Image (tube, rainbow, N blue to C red; front, side, top):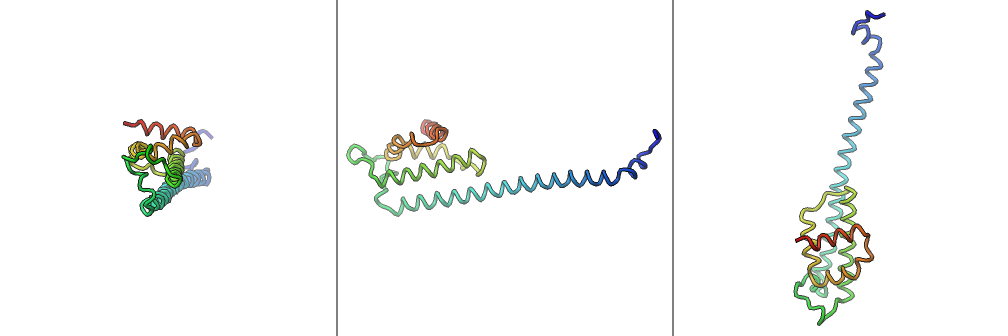
Length: 153
């Protein structure tokens, strides 16, 4: 019994070895497939977020009543934020919230320069005023993220 050679062992256990090899190979293939699918889903999510971003800003550039949103010289003492400007900036904030949560949950690829963009946008008078009014309504982590971006420089 103790003199069993490697060939004898193989002949006695070839089916078990083949099964184990198949299982390990199947698990490796499944892992690779899941990784590949997750990457594809992240790219698809990024494309969808980009589409939403484009649609949102198209609204801004097609509506002359929203021009002050990006005006660094907007005088809010002379002309307070309009309801239309407030609604638009809140739509931007909601879009940013979706992007933030998708990034945090690793559901999309992080856009380059996001912190810089948020710093710039929320340094403008109209977005800054709307943010101050609506940040209390936001998710605590998202609000902290935006606040960190606002003090980025």
